[in-house]
Amino acid sequence: MDHLMKITDLNVVFHIFGADVHAVRGIDLELNKGETLAIVGESGSGKSVTSKSIMGLIPNPPGEITSGEILFEGKDLVQYSQKQMQKIRGKDISMIFQDPMTALNPTMKIGKQIMEGLIKHQGLSKHDAKERAIELLQLVGIPNPEKRVDEYPHQFSGGMRQRVVIAIALACNPKILIADEPTTALDVTIQAQILDLMRDLQEKTGTAIILITHDLGVVANLAKRVAVMYGGKIVETGTLDEIFYNPKHPYTWGLLSSMPKLHAKTDKLLAIPGTPPDLSHPPKGCPFAARCPYAMKVCIDHMPEYTELSKTQKAACWLLDERAPKVDPPSTIGVGGEA
Image (tube, rainbow, N blue to C red; front, side, top):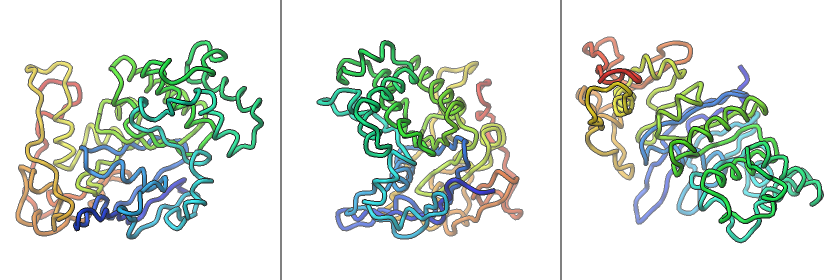
């Protein structure tokens, strides 16, 4: 299969206060046309650094892509200059940033912020760009777009601001849309509306989406394929059903166990004990070993290789080695069931 994007052995290091923080450590990812790939994990796992690497937004210094490829339509974006990336950003690859409160310029009218990309990348006149901006506001569900196109961000609610951010990201019909925690700052009702909007827009435009999130509920509503990230590495990948109903890595078990259950017998939420590793001194072995209740000595000393579980699922865990003891997943990972 020809992939729209293929990331191979990506390594990103931040040189901070005399230490090298290995934020992303040799990850491989693939994205196909029109699909939604979710990258999930706790804060500090490397999700946002991965997305910013794709966009060419790693600040250098202190950050640096030390090795790897990010192939977009066969061209390696790692080798692109900032000037070359300016032609890609917004036109071919767009990003919805995490906080709609700060993603918009408070001193500029909404319409002008949408028009910028249309004028720069598509060469539209100001008149045509404004007409297109009105169409985009209507597309993302902003009422009275002819009037609201001339209003400022402070005149919009948080949910409406996020819709405007999505309109800006979609303005030039990008082939890839990166959504970095697109619903984190919104209440539950607005979250559902934004997810419905993104799903509807993807069906209409065919845009591939990379969804960056720690919220597995968001993943279940939008993604078709999932990559679980921890300690700067991808520890498990699979289809949505494989990750939710047949997960194989203990970290994935922990994430699923921490989801609220609709019919749970207790209102107590489960949490993964311990803290993520210090990536200025990355562990030699499995990054999750220090927090894993099933860890063996080999987990601490040696990094596990990936085990191919199906054509679409693989996981890096020593428990999948034929010599390892048999361990069953905990009963707490049932999605939406009793706990």
